[in-house]
Every structure is written in C-alpha cells, then in structure tokens.
Amino acid sequence: MSTHETRQRIVNAGTELFRRSGYTGTGMKQIAEVAAAPFGSIYHFFPGGKAQLGEEVIRTSGAVYLGLITTLMTPYEDRVAATADAFAAAAGTLAELDFADPCPIATVAMEVASTNETLRQATSEVFASWIDHLAAYYAQGGIPEPTARETASSVIALLEGAFMLGRAARSTEPVRAAGTAAAAIVRAALAGP
Image (cartoon, rainbow, N blue to C red):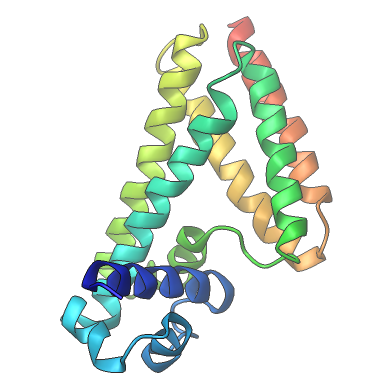
C-alpha cells in the first residue's frame, strides 16, 4: 500500500468513525484499526494528532458533500423541485445509514464548537462553502441577492436540524417535513416580495 493510500485510509476511517461516534467518542487506536494502518502512521501523516486529522476529515468531507449538493441539484432548472428532491434523497440516505448521522461535519461541530477553535473554524468554513454554492445556484435560478443567501442558509439549517431530529426519532419524517418547508421557502423567494 502506498503512502497516499495509507493516508487516505486514515482519513476515511476518521470520517466514518467521527460520523458514527463523534469526535470525542473516537480514539486514535480505533482509527488505526479501522484504517488497517500502523498506529504510528497516523502521527506520521498528522503530526498535530487528532485535531489535525479532525480538521482534514471536516474539510475533505465538506468537499465531498458539496459535490453531492452539486450532483443532486445542478440537473434541475426548477429550484423548488431540486430542493424537494434533495431532501427526499437525504431522507433515503438517513434510512440507509440506519439513522446514523450522515454528516460528520455537523456531528463534530455540535461537539467541539465551544472547545476547539480550529475545528469550529473548519466546520464554519465548510458550512459557509455550502451556503455560498447553494446561494449562487438559487441566484442563477432567479432569486435575487441577498434573498438567495438567506434562502440557502435556511435550507442548510433545515437539513442539518432535520438530520438531528430524524436520528433521535429514528424516522425520515423530520427530513421529509423539512424538505416541504425548504421547498416552500425557495418557492416564496422566487415569487419575491
């Protein structure tokens, strides 16, 4: 296995474990075991330890999820339908994951936002990138700025909150209800004042 492959396996293991068990609930030895990598290799690639790995996981996962947002929504000209369908897909993902958190960024943000400034900043930047991308998508569809940005912020907040409620209830209903609300927000933004 190449050094690049080992590093990627460590990041992938961190992503999976942080998503399932949270940042504080995941140990470095556990990451090494899941990655099938020597324990010392984690510190070789991440000399800053768990915090550095956590930041890498947040930024890497954030980019992956931004790609998913693009893939799910770009084919649609109809911004309302795109939003509704993205939430329907998110509900399906939540069920497929047996109601484990599908978003390691939110899991880490909830845990460490008040205790680890580096990870708080990384999660903030990832969420901002999603909002920026979604705001641009909505603006291209006819929603004027700054309404497009407010709409994007609301949609992301609805999605992340719905994931939390869905996990607690072990139900996709909160995600589906949030999808209805998000589509209504987009519809209202398109209609204008």
